[in-house]
Length: 354
Image 1 (tube, rainbow, N blue to C red):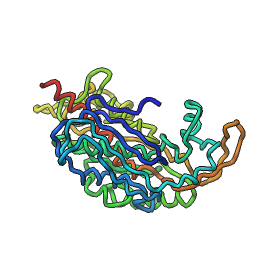
Image 2 (cartoon, rainbow, N blue to C red; image 1 turned 30 degrees about the horizontal axis):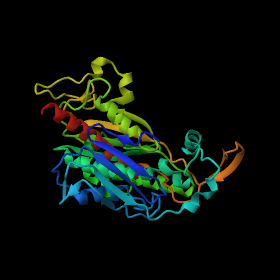
Image 3 (spheres, rainbow, N blue to C red; image 1 turned 180 degrees about the vertical axis):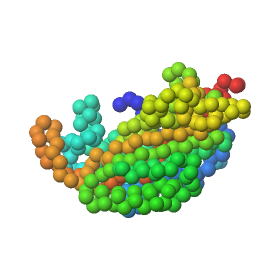
Image 4 (cartoon, one colour; image 1 turned 90 degrees about the vertical axis):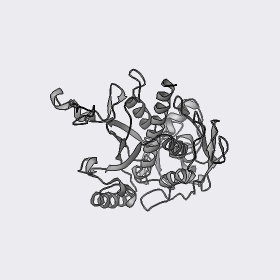
């Protein structure tokens, strides 16, 4: 199985399955001498952790990270940083009924056809539990980035949207509710809707918006390694993501150039920011903002038709502990992947000036 690494200079390789002994990773390319804030890393893991509210999966895991290498006396040594998080609350029996059947819209079928074998317990490698490793790496990446802040939040659940621009939102309110929506009125509607969806044995999708402030001019490369292209790849690599748009996104396709152009101020900033902080694949110093679309979780608690390994039509119904809506727990994952991308380009930029 290829494709388990991400990044150029700041590089993360992840390992582990949902119902194996542990998940973890190796970070290569982290500069030496970085004083590691372990509490900040655990805080990000706690944000991603299951069982934290009534609207997410009730799997109970402490998700405490153990560092194995690359850190000495609280500082990075420049060597690969190895880490792991133990899995302590698996209920593999919840998946016995899909041992020979494929959940609709899940990775079950494609994994089995590609590899000829699959770990059906919790989806194995396709489980979102793999994102623990991304959150650890992202928390370290955030500590590399000077003066850069990354704030993601839930901007929609189903057809319930925040109707304010991000500039009008108070990001300090993101963690004030279980949905991680910085608008309290909208958050209440979202939470009530998710609870109703759960009662129906169903799931619902939504979007996460991310705003990055303080990015210097010059991150990104102009051809294949454009900053927005790498951010798009990072976001689309997250489980259940079906769409990515930055800046004006698809709305920009409806506009004329005279409407869309970001006119300059004398200091190089722009009067508007429909470019989303990136022009020609390179950051221009303005806020970078983008939106990520998550599909409904594939495993639902309603009976559906599917096929088994022999191609027979069979009935199946989801069991176990699953998120009725993944977006609240996806917020720290989106931030983590954004931080990994930015740290990578930040270190590439630094290498130019040596």
